[in-house]
Length: 276
Figure 1 (cartoon, rainbow, N blue to C red):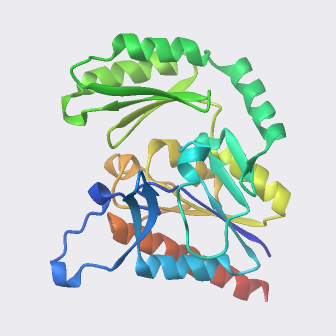
Figure 2: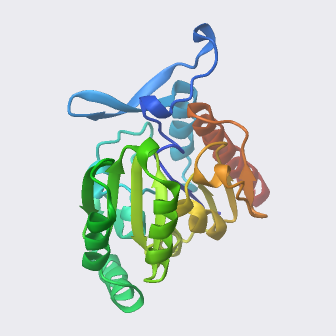
């Protein structure tokens, strides 16, 4: 039995300093391992316990660990996970499927064909974002992998009504909007992590899929998996979103990441015992 483990990264498996959520007294705070450095500065962390559990999980020959992220390929490749390197990785919200670090061209062509057929072009959405955003709170505007767009904003200054209006405008054109920290993403509806996960499952012969994620862009991934978990923070937790196959965790911050890896290991071990 092959088990595919597809996990979102930021605020699910790894955490920036701002997202750690260390609310406990300092003497009992978990020891942290830095797993990402950017511009010579530490950027993302796991607990040492989570790192050890992940390393053990990736050594299991019947487990296929697939990092699954909205990050671009370049942003993803800054991360150094413990354990065996992942052969497959899903980047750009499913738009890029990496095999041994190299983008799969056939997959990218399939994605491009679906986007051209099913939703408004990126240029139209990007232009609207720039025209509608208020310079008072807009800090950066970016296009990722020529697939989707996002804004970096001062979150406290962005009106909720503006976000609602943007979501309605985008939805009418086949796009979705997601707020994650200081970033507002506009992503084509057909661009999904779940489609890429199914492709990896097909290639590896995985008979069971496990997943985790915290944001609206992860919902399709969680629903597509046989079992899934979401942390006690993020868009999905704020909306109290769940599903029959999704376990909502009470833990938040970096301790939620540790509990997610523990759940992956526990479920993969249970399935292995059943198979034996």
